[in-house]
Image (tube, rainbow, N blue to C red):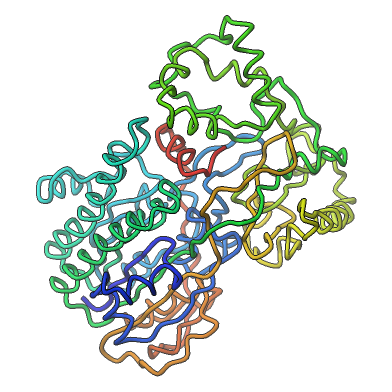
Length: 533
């Protein structure tokens, strides 16, 4: 193997350093000690579904086309998949160069293209995803056991110890599946990603021992893979960092509603929400009403305080009532009581919190646009000024930066993105699309912008300066380590730890036809991690 890329979701120095100091992660610590390391600045927005495609293509979301966990067609939405990534991936560059790749558990890789090697998709794929080559998932399961994309109990109300043990087991399965495939296909390039280093913070906030156990499990697999594959070059990279949020949840649509920019309705489902996901385990009724005025009034009261289904479900789980309430209160009862953004009547709105921005409703671009096209720039300027004035209850700015999307997003697909992009101050505040009170408590742990990168191995310059390393630099660095010319159209550059060929021009990428993601279980998992409200 020439180059091995370890993807550690949400890994960052504040998490890793204490574990290194305590001797918890001998294999990762050795890689960091023997090679060259640095902070890896993530993109804006620094969220999994968009950031991993940026890492493995080397371009910003405006060039690869994935901005969030969701894609939008007008006001309709679906969960993104690999057909939404409209740029070459590392394994496609390798394939074009005549090299073989093995890719395991990388987010937004289902369905994979045909390449020389193997791809077992990760996060946002279905539990039995299409893999490359056909039938390889069954071979992996026969070889290593019950290989799964998700934990069996990931959305089970009996969450806790059993769910966490499944997380540990998944880390083992990633490593063993990768070793099996590497032995079978003998790839020049390998890429294995570990997701639960992120999920453990969302699901078990503040539980340091569980964080340690997940990272220990990952480190064991890193050691086993290094021993089996003996790669010339090893790259460790994360898509973003992770840390405590000590500020507020800021409800952007409520703020815009008070300025008469957002209009609301109770006639539709509005901004994407867990309410739109039919949870057959909890809700048995398919009719349009709960049949109980009392329950509907209770739902209305909850909605009026901004109590999302996700928050309410979490509270009910803790007291053991989620299943009972779920069976007697259909999702439609809460819908009927909730104010939601009226897309067609609003001038602008936050459509998904993890997009980190606001979309204008423009005539000629959006199905029922209300902002005239010739007023677009003026409307953007007004939104930027308005959002820049937003302050917390403490009197401090909610955002450290409010800019046109072009500051961070540009390319042929940029017009599909939000129009005004916001960066929360120190990433201490989260955003919400909920209509209700303007502020609430944020999720205890969430994404930070600084991840990590480490490069070790033969020919690596351990004295190189990686200051300023960016997420977009990972792909050209990996290509350089494989002896493949980086794409001159990439937004990143090879890091100075490796010798790089001169960038080259590549033929236009053959974009695949977009496919729908018809898997409600994936949407439910997004809700459990807080990505759908």
